[in-house]
Length: 128
Image (cartoon, rainbow, N blue to C red; front, side, top):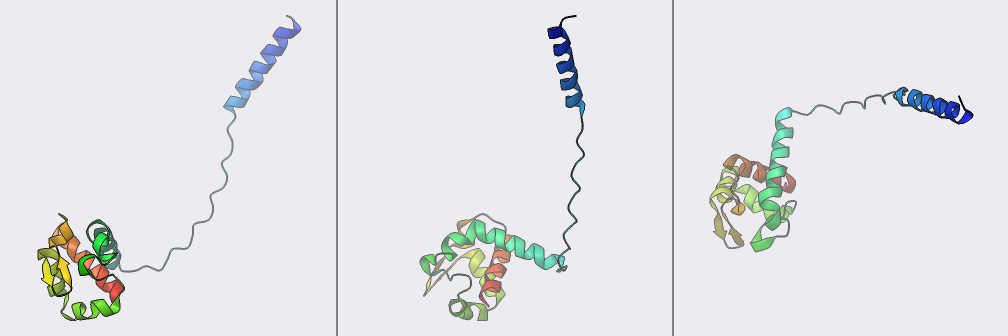
C-alpha cells in the first residue's frame, strides 16, 4: 500500500467518523414566568375585535375618512358611546348616514355580525 492510499483511507475514515458524530444540544433556557392570567373571554374578544377592526374598520376609522371617529378620540366618541352599544352595533352592521358622516354597512366588508360587534367593542374600549 502506498503512502497516498494510506493517507486517502485515513482521511475517509476521519470524514466518516466526523459525519456520525452527534453534538450535544445546548440546554434549553429556563421558561419565562407566565403572565398573570386574564379572563380567557376578554382576551379572545379583544383579539377578535382587533382582528376585525384591522380587516374592516381601520382603513376609514384609522384616518377619520368620511367622519369616521378615530379610536382613542374620546371627544369624538363620547356622544356615540352615550347612545349605547345596541345603537353602535346597529349603525355598524346596517350602515348609517349622520350629520358627521357616513358609515357603510359592515364597513363595506362581508364579516359576520359578531365580528363587527367585536370591532365596535374594540374601538369603544380604546375610546373611553
